[in-house]
Image (cartoon, rainbow, N blue to C red; front, side, top):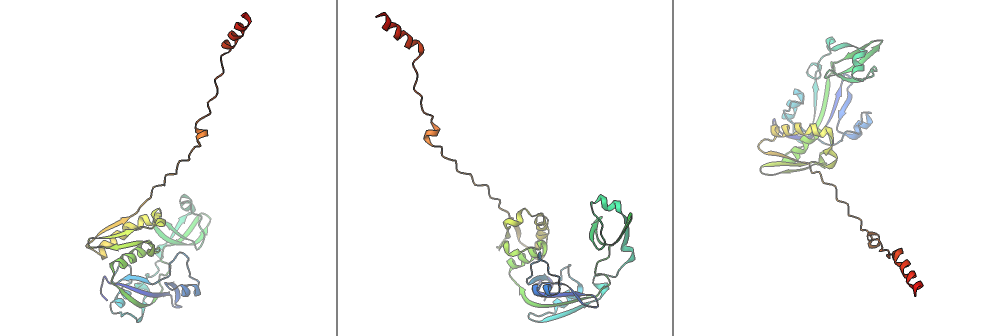
Length: 261
C-alpha cells in the first residue's frame, strides 16, 4: 500500500496492560464488551494510508499490509496518547463552571476554555480537572485485517463523508464525472448543524486526497405545494335575489283611488 491509498478494514483497538477494548467497527464485539453505541454505524471502515489522524506505527503497518491478512500493532504510551503530565491537572473555581452553566460532578467530561478534560473532584468552591487524555500513559494494541483496496472515486468520497460527518454515507448520492464530484445531500442532513460544519471539512479533504475536480454539493429545498382552492357552491357564492317589495306609498295611493271611485 502507498500513501494516499484508501483501504477498507475491520479493526479492534485495546488500551492498557490489561488490553481493554475501547473501539471497534464490529457490532457484536462491541456489545460483548459493553461499549456498544447506538449512534455509531458498525460496518467496514475506510482509512487513508499516511493520513495525519493515524498513529505512525499503524501507517507503517498499512504500507506493508496485504488484502485478506490480519495484522497486530503495538504502540508505546509515549507514541500513542502521551504520558500523563501533572501540569495538565488544573484547579478551577465553582464560579467558572457556573458562568458556563455546568454543574460539576466527579468523573464528568467537560470542555472549558477550548480544552477537554475530566473532573477529578469537587470541593466547596473548587473543582479539580484533569486535562490529560483519558488513555495517557497507556499502551495501545491495534488489530486489523484489510478487506479490500478502494479504487472507485465515488466510494472514496463516501468514505470521506463517513470520516467527516460520522453518519450513514449510503444516504448520500455521489457521482464522479470528468470535471466534478457531485454530492446530493439527503433530507435529514440538510438542517443538521453537524453537517453544516462537516461539509467544509469534507470539501477540504476531497481537494487534498482527490484533487483535480470541482466539488458540487446539491441541497434541494422543495417549495411547499400550493393547496388547491376549495370550490364554493354556486348557491352559496351567489345569494338569492330577494323579491322587491312595493313601496308603501304605492299601496296607499291605490287604496285611495279605490275609495274615490
